[in-house]
Length: 346
Image (cartoon, rainbow, N blue to C red; front, side):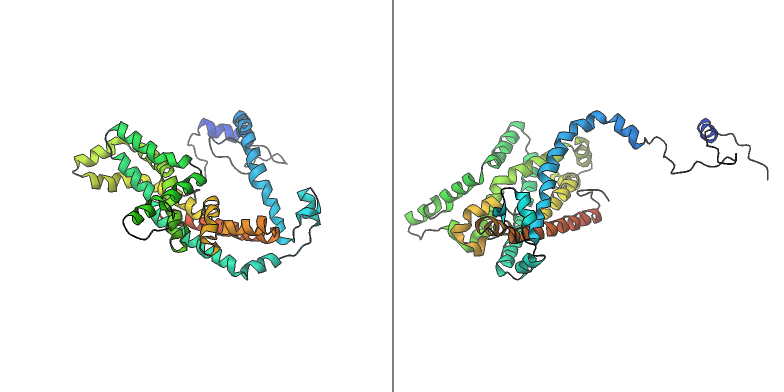
């Protein structure tokens, strides 16, 4: 057969002319992986972005130092760790006796550990059902306000408690719901028995959820309002011209715009399912007792810091971390099945 006479492009001609000659004088295709058009090599990209990479080096160094280097300390979960062997923690780890999986065996046989797991999961589901939707609803309510000044004031008032410490938040609730608080005083003044909700183990989980809503709902409002600000007003105008009322515009325009943010925050919230507020619960642990308030974080603190059983506490923390990673991956997979990006792409 005769060769094709179709003219080649200039780029194809240059590529063919620069094909290296194989041994023996015969020409052949270029060896190795072909680079896609317009894609730079790693060396060229590093050279192009060297200034930006140098700017990120301090942040990367801090993350490595404070987030990843301490992970090496999880080795004490497999030891009978004794910090008093040496003033140097690394030397103490090197000379502490190795016990293998003994600490993990103790954990799975400890009823107090499973009680802490149960309390943690109950608090998580309560906060997921009662706390997570509230910032979305408040953001939709504030976004529907026409006057910018009223919207700004409402946003500032709701966001203010986010800056309060947990000590202050619990003190405010104590003055309102404690045995000598405002609610109990009003009931006694009208001939009823007083209430002390702050020391009631049966209502402690709802109390913790209410505190979290009052303190952190404003932060969620900021996130969702930022997502709503990116929605084009043309979509609302087009929906209004098609006859959609306010509720239909919210259902077909606003909520689809919030869905990616809701999916992302939901994945992150599921990842924090086993972290339900260490400082908040620790401050109220003695008031209601460990049976109602013990969660995994306080369990690790009590056994590691108070009882100085460091290997046992490290094993409990390691189990919590592994389960949390699994929850993040599972929630992110569910987000992908729903058509959302989640924490990372497929």
